[in-house]
Length: 485
Image (cartoon, rainbow, N blue to C red; front, side, top):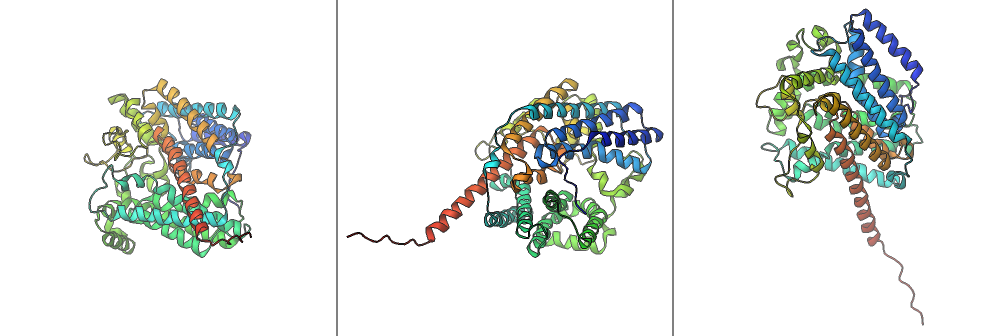
């Protein structure tokens, strides 16, 4: 068995599958216009995916990862439960229309960029040896774990403007780099016969620990996802033992990661010391019933109604209701406007250098506006809101079209110039691993930070290797030239 890593998805069989899905939705009571608009959104997203090289390039993968939580996952889940696709949405037709227009604009931007002639990308010129990749993997792991350990053991909240706050933004990239480099080295050194080793298994377990200490499903799943991206790109064929292992891991993710991240999140994050967090985690797995169950709060107004518990973690990766909620808030409270989003362009400047630097709007603030169930004093919980809703929040239909076209055209253009395809090396896979969980809720700042932080870390790694190289070179004694008489 091989994991799929397509560079192109044929549109004809895709259309047949989507038309079959549409017919079933109509039988289940979905509004025909809603179903047709959602079908259009998926076709546009896959067309953009094909135009940009599919999974072989970060831009193509971005299009696929964006459509999954916004349209595909919620629609398939409703289909499996026998429910209408527009169940419990306040503005179903407007929500579907916003999604369709958003992905149509993404498709146009992808087509424009794909028709341009591009020089050889920056990463195409970079080559790293196996030893260098091993050094990068180890150093990235050490730095990532150090950053997370310092954050977890803080006595108070993380202070804006501190060095630790600046380093926190790089944590996800460092973790991805560590796992993906080690996986790539294992595949190369074994000629593709093996994708796991004792060191790599230890690294994956170690990388999951910070996610457990913060009860974050993203933190626990990102290392595994990064490993899967590299394995899929290598076209590795799993043995029966590998298939059984993957099935067991999937079972653990489905039955334990989601309830743990939801039910134990607040007690674990409220703990002040590392020992307290560890004790709470042990207590949870010994007796999870004492932490309550998030499913007890499910009501008929939930996304999947009273059937929500049957879809488990899938419900947490569906962002369609969040789009509907933000659109509803825009109708009642007005649009947010571009001025609150623009400060992201200067967000790379540390607070230490610019104490009064403008702060862009956060997902938490938008979550309060949209009416998510959260305390009035909650200013830290991250809220995943689907990208179409965020772009609609900039000013309505015209803003949705203009800003989506502009932002994605710029994002695709810069990414194609900087990042090469995955066939040319491991570095091109790093953005794919890091964007998988954010593409569906990618505000303009997410795309900007994805490119800037990735390139910043890349150049930092290159600089580090050069320093190591020069340092080791200076320690090597050279033959003294013979004097001439």
